[in-house]
Amino acid sequence: MADQIEYKVARILLSSEKIRNRVNELGAEIAREYEGKNPILITLLKGGFIFLADLTRAVEIPHEVDFMLIRSYEGKRSTGSVQIVQDLKLNIEGRHVVIVEDIVDTGLTLSYIREHLELRKPASLIVCTLLDKVETRKIEVKVDKVGFPIEDEFVVGYGLDYRQHYRNLPHIAILDPK
Ligand code: 5GP
Image (tube, rainbow, N blue to C red; front, top):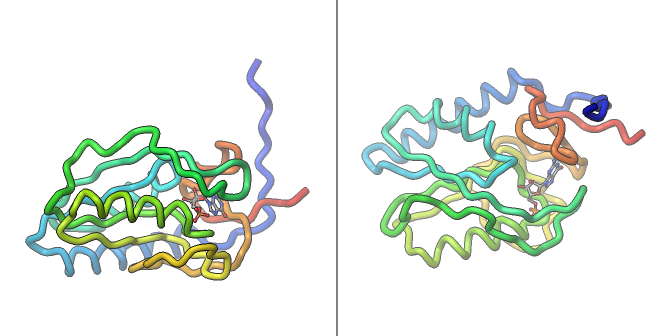
């Protein structure tokens, strides 16, 4: 029989409505800035899949999407070593790229991916993250668009997991430490 899993959320940090409004704003901004440029929105799986699904529908200009499956986290903190488990399908040389991230914490994952993708010579490359834990950076990395700056608390929901669960919550929540 499957394990019984019980979700324990201490409080909701960002409601689904708040997220929806901000994602729509970000989408409109990207659509304005990339009109006629056919950008590629790239997300890092698994955490970014829900953000990308909503953002792509809010970017109302022609664009493509692609995915990179990476592994960088063990439990609750970044290990610093990033492994590309599955690479992009599209060639990004000469293309305008928007990296769509769920959250930037230490910055180690993004810094690695950013440098790695720059080597493929895109025409431009920016980062759009839904959440930004500004105070916990271990490495400086350029983040161009931020949905919400947040404090140093472990969050789940809207694609973000704890041990592969909680990704399906429609809001961003703080786990109950108990
Ligand atoms: P960084 O390398 O910047 O420390 O971590 C980036 C990745 O770690 C994110 O893409 C995300 O998958 C994961 N991460 C960082 N902070 C949190 C958090 O508060 N909650 C969850 N669920 N994942 C996080």
